[in-house]
Image (cartoon, rainbow, N blue to C red; front, side):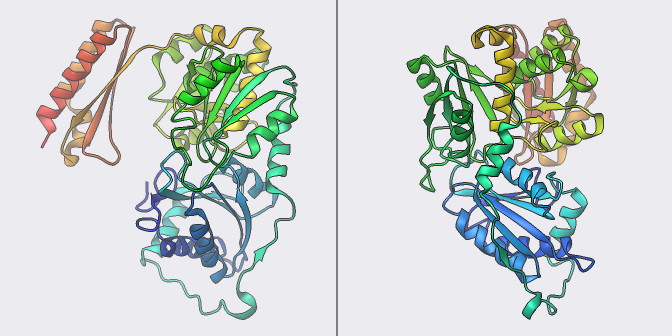
Length: 451
């Protein structure tokens, strides 16, 4: 992880941490790096519905233009639309201005390369070095005709993206009642276009963005309204997206949540039944529930496990040839179709699996046993985070607990990336038992390595 770029780009409170000046510097540095070897880079820029999006978009654009790069502004579009259109436009990079599921006062800048994948660490480090003043660049030559320009979008970005989404599903949805919660975010136009084109009977929630209501008690992090509306309307299924529409949470006809782990199970089994699950494996993170592993094992499907973060899921998938990966939180990657998480595309792939099963969605959900989880934070000195993870006494204590659970549970400890904490997570059949064990592990770690 870099000094400015985290696992998902640069983020912060707009106009205090993520300022117009920093956005300018990011645009300037990125375009300069991409424009080395006398190349005139072209960058496409999309944003979500946050009030700060205009400010950051224009500042970043100015930075790109100042070093001879050209910009195509896509307007308000989902993150995955940028990843798709950067390839279609044969551009050198795509930029997303969004803070995903965070509150409206935050914003972020995320960069894709010309193939629609997140930038390599080495490229991000070179951009950071320029922004932080560690590498000097000369802009004296970028005057007159060598300045960049804003190009006109040669067609509707939304139409091109929704047309692409429709190519990923070969089923009609006539007579299916679908409720969509677009989080007052980037999918507020795209999601209903797709489902209405497929013939579904569509009800849309939280599709009136005003710049400050993105993710406000709605979307994938607050699905309560969606759950209630699905039951109220007698709908077949509900889908909730987040602010930049790269994650998905599903609701069954009884109003119950189907999280990313269950979506992976349902879609993984479907792909295998069609002979489309390469390597007979899916990719998930260390936070995926033990129930996912047990359920998929029954169907001869293995699981490659990565660190938390869709960046790491994607890296693993590209190395192993896996075509399906994701996180419990709802980031899903269907690598046969796209290069990043895409909430609407994922919901379409889920519909294929659901309809092919011939079952009610609640029946599919209940086939998968998700084990209770207990999470307790152990406060530690930042200097001892790595030491705590490798401590022999801690490792033996954890091994003894897992032996007591006799294969029906597990213990996971991992350091917080931002706080002086180690997160202790247990899974098992008995919530009271695992809660007690979690507190014991956390207490041991805090006693040995706390401040």
